[in-house]
Length: 529
Image (cartoon, rainbow, N blue to C red):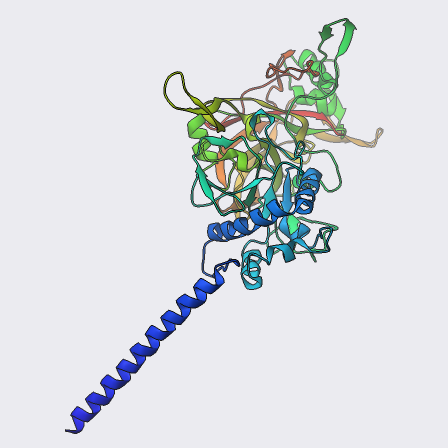
């Protein structure tokens, strides 16, 4: 009997627990219904893509209803603080409209304070990007904030499709090969600016961020309006001797290379550039007015395969995956230089390339309907791609190559940047150095004695390097550059992409030998500027 009583008590307790559970579920559902409109709630466990979507829905509303906010976004985009039309939310959130309301306060009408806090803590570099769209349909430069009310696109990490929302929470999905031909801004994370718990170099100044955000590298810092590692024509101008007639000129930075090519038929062209050595002048001191540069870059192979390789992260700009949602690719250059101190140097720099400078695209407005009654749509559809060579107006600086201090061979590795998580490890290798140097007591300077390796030959030393690996980056391979490699293939003009503008000063035809299966780079010394 006692067992039966205990059993009855247990059943009653179980029933009470179930009843309370049902009541809690009903209560939770009711609360959820009450809080989803008009304020958007975000749970801490949702993905970053979901967080960007939640922010995008709210931002579409305030962008539509408030011209002052459109003006602020346009103004900040035109500053191009990282050389792209990127606007960091953390920079503009305290900006006020004419009624004295901040952008953050405007957002809080449509998203709760707790939810917005979760979004910003999870996405510290949350960015509003203003894209340049085909047919001059929309860009930061031509944005008329009175009449152009952009929709909001979300750059996803989990898919190559691009959702676009408006102020009424209507959503449409663009396919990977489609580009909008209507005003739209993009919600994304920033690859050039990151939170300061990463191995970074440059704090963003003047933005009241309390040192929370930093540039990945000075190559992305446009706050001082300095030279950029941009792509495009070679810069400068050409002479105009007569009406409608232009005579292209050689870029003056190639003058020393042309001399080296002519005077070093049986020697090393770099001997002439760095030491003034040629057949009539066998010895010379190091000229510290020159350094190595990367002057050009191009991808190799099948365009579709390349896109898959360097855009396998959906956050990358992609032609077949929403390239328009991010203006440029970021590439990391690692140069490994052996030193006679037995400690090698890993020199890291970056360069940026627009997707439209790397790839030529063909396509047109999407059409629908039968023969004779097609309808012009508001979407540009890409049908095919080609590869393009990029020549840098401002070449990518590497290092002055003094054989007295550095190895006769260097290694260059290039990666497409997707992440900033860095792993460091040590590696050792045997490296050759030139031994033909002597100190001239009369001139009180060190001289390179003889061309090439001279009579002294070379010495081999074991050099240790600290090598960094960035988790998530797309590694595109390594090339070996030797001091004795020819710099120029010949002294003819390097073929330029077609241009509607007058031809800029041309580069000379640099050696095409530095190639992997994925890319080719053009390397040559030039004057330090």
